[in-house]
Length: 108
Image 1 (cartoon, helix red, strand yellow):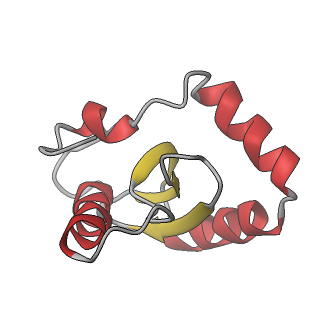
Image 2 (spheres, rainbow, N blue to C red):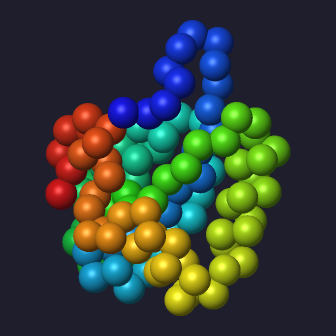
């Protein structure tokens, strides 16, 4: 469940997606994490099969303000791969698809 879903309380999410082989990582920022993940998942199922499709949500964090989310996104994008892997493993040791926690239908 996403935190603070009260009316008027806006959150901005920084997230990391990967493919089923964990060979590519995609970092993004959005005010609507559920919608964004659904878009990524639909894109990967409607296009021809691409093993590099990043549709597995393995990390996300919430920020109260957009500028903080943009700053954090830039920090994450500047990380070297071993640091990214450590960040994900620290918060999601099994590399589960966290979209399941967001009640998104069609998670794989």
